[in-house]
Image (cartoon, rainbow, N blue to C red):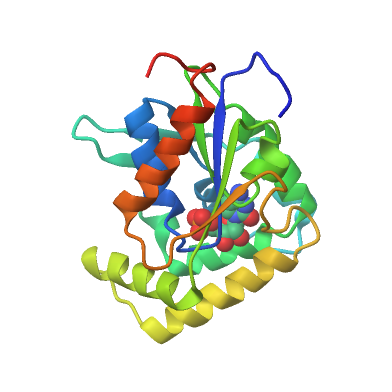
Length: 234
Ligand code: C5P
């Protein structure tokens, strides 16, 4: 770990449906730390590009767009999270499976990954940051004080996504979700730039058969030991 005066970072990486999103939000809430949902940035970019008719092949244009994205994450008074793009609410538009697929297609482009770097690092503010993504511990915050890599079997991840969508009253097809998850895993793992893989100093946690509370409790236990000096206030 590189000693640093910057606010501490807890990096939580892993594949689609590993529970990262929910786990990261819970942990950020308990610690009163900021949260970066980096996947949402890739999704917003995919959404903007699609609306503007920019094809996946136009990497230079996508990179420029990534650097200039007026995106904001806000929490409403009743605790609901909203993603705003130039003030427009895109929270639901970016959560479709279609947008996720497009996000993973543009995520292979080095120009896009480079373009989103500064935006992601801007989320690092005191008292600390929980960073959720695929390359938080490897490329964006290599000096993170604690790096967790969450995994679960593809079957279980598809089941979790299915349940999530059903709970939101959305249409879902389990077999389709499984195929989508395995295709996305393959693309994320095989891309040349920042492929999805645990950082050498990450702790790999297989969450198959664990519920969210158990995963959160385990990570908080680790965080409390690791960050005692960096963040004595919680
Ligand atoms: O996490 P989420 O499913 O919202 O991310 C959408 C897609 O964005 C992922 O499938 C992945 O291809 C890409 N992504 C990435 N690096 C990140 C976060 C997301 O490549 N740090």
